[in-house]
Image (cartoon, one colour):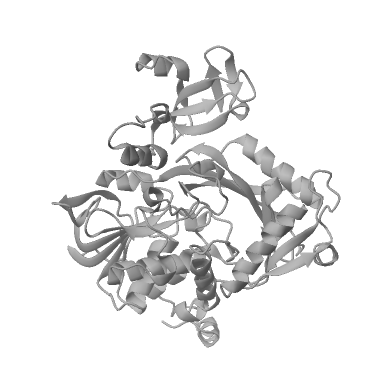
Length: 416
Length: 95
């Protein structure tokens, strides 16, 4: 069924009796060409691009719970492509371009809103670094704009410009950045993939891999064995837990990141604001809630909930830069599990086991990458070669010294 | 989280800095034949378990000792805390 304004009017006049489920609930077949583990944003996007771009329809997505119940439903919905390094920026800019055409591609309203993102600058050194980053973005076809202090005061008059420790000196803006309705991303990709014949199998937990003579033949699941020509893993957050079933150790630690939503307010924020120096960033959802977060808790965790010291740190950051946030009451807070990689950048690569492919290590930046991650993983699965924009995301970069370390923190995952 | 320091008693985890898996105590032999591979594995690969995890915490805002904390990564429950020095010596390290 194709969605349109006409369809909404027609259904409204006929009692909404014509709507059908957005995707099927199929029984798993015994064998697929490609099985994707993980029915989150990345897994579903991979399935969609496999079917729509790479002409692979004999594909299944296995999800242990319900689709969109993991990190694609637990993030702070921001899209942007403001990276510095060559290994990253073309990939993230491709992602932003895919976001811009996503709703038409999927025939699904994902409420993509390019309301802009702005990173605050507090010192001359930081200004130099951000202008360098802005230039790198422009060289890669993205947009970037340096905002001086009067421009920041005009656009964001509610900020605290005279904080003693971090006075605001300017900002780096990306006007094409913004926010997306995150659940709709999972649902839209699922519906589009399902429409092209992909089986989306929920409540199907992978319990092991069937590996014979170094070749992956399929997966053992809670609903029986499912054979596969190729298996792609896209379960960021739980990558360590899943790949341990294939006896793999990864250059990844799992960490918890907390996020918060205030009560609904009238529109007060023009876009996304990041206060990196104070470990705080914020945007306003279409429902009016202030959506904000900060740094990861900093210790290995699979608990999907954090601890209070980081809550205090995030709220202190918010009060320091945007004192009006103190008038808003907190509505919800939650935690999500991040694959924190050893250089802060992701991995989309083959493993040493033939037929087993890996997509993970997204740190806390996986949501914005969803379309490009799906496209590049689909390319890798279909063609057995990396997508031109994802050639740097290799497993062996830690061995060969080709790290993509945006923050320059080294192999200390809780600092990225 | 409260870390029950063997010398100082219960202390808030915010006094500590986290390093990672306690296997980082066992630095590979820099003179061994396979040193490139073993330092790569030491530096970059992690078991990253969901469940019991032995990990290094540094009491930066306290007595500046290194501790080996055994903690469940699915619940954050801490079940044992040892001095990293004692752990290393029990493994045969003398310095």
